[in-house]
Image (cartoon, rainbow, N blue to C red):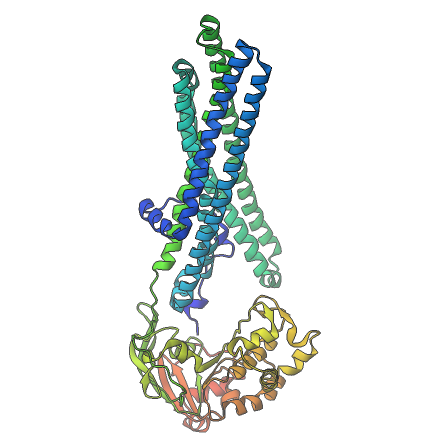
Length: 611
């Protein structure tokens, strides 16, 4: 059966696209983000103090240099006094370096602490969300929120914030410093300001647009590469290498053109800004030189030197602020996307007073259960059955009939739309969710393993198991023999999803992991579908011993594996159409009889079969 989890996902690599979108509500996003500063707000305040100190020192330095030139070179030629002033100037620049370094370190520490809190809360919240949330959002989208979007927040806090504060304060400090020294020379510095503002506005929009386009193409390129690598078996099986290469070449060329366009616009802006900066210096020298020649009592070489330094420093913050704006907007937009995770409600909730059983008998009742994944598309309708404690119940039916959905509802991965599911006579919604799922051992058709050793993966459901218990579980699942043949045995490292083992070996490990967990209710969802007939025969005895006196539910397409079940349920057209033992259903010569008879003629019976 096909659940939403098997549906389309965002393409691989889509999470690599850097977001440059604007936030929906800047004020609200900033307020919520600021709450995560917590005790780190002290670091923020300290870093701002260091930034202010650095700006003051860097603003005072040119004034001291100009004064030293005027007083001790132009007027008195006092070398000793001039050297003392230069030593003072060196101390000021050293102090500015120290304050800037301290502010950078404090901001980096604060940014990492904020990011740590956000990631911790996001991951903790994700663990509580229902499976339906992941069906709707997709894995790629969540990865993007927890990586790229949070990286945007970090980049602004660690770099953009300091550039914003330092740039703004530098502009104000330099402007105040110039006005306090001389208004005409200040005017000469500001002559090119309107031209700078115009260029920043015009080119800033173009660069932002080009950057957004470039980042989208980078994401498309990453997606194309990862999709091709993941689907290499399919590509080679259908001999589509040339076609895939042509598709990639097109995406690659588009990405290159977008990158060239972005760099071209960026490089054009920088030389223009340098030209205007040079033009401003020329105005200062021209106007200052004329004023110095005409009025040497007021104007001096030292004063002119001071304004030359101020002119260079006045335009640098403007470039900083123009680049920070997009970063700030992206950080707020990224934080909004992260906050959307925090705002997602838990659809599967514990009751106010959850029931925690010490043990369960394992009697399961489905009573008039209705369920759908998508509105208007029912998967189960008025489904009722009882699985007796300690008995084996097998569920069979065409692909897409809803067999796996029954398991999902029993484990409360989803809640029923209508009806109820009882365990030992109590609605499963009354149980503590963790306690309920602890009673169940589920072996899926596609088992999942984490990167780690075989031993660590076997212990996942029973961390305190002893060595002999691990080996016994592996022997029952017929996994011990192949594990011991591996060079490192139980210490063999598994790569992501355990892909360095065959599919059959992964299923044997999944069975062993469930055996070790010793659940009260055993659920096998196509657990032997990828195991060869010889191996299957060998593990049937172990599974039979495992299922003895244990409520077991088996979903299987290979009907030969469930002939000895105490009860067979045939699911079709969203409900149970037949139930009974294998002999009873074969004697009835109904739907099950037809499925069993066609088992060796047709690989899969689908929903288009008519009763």
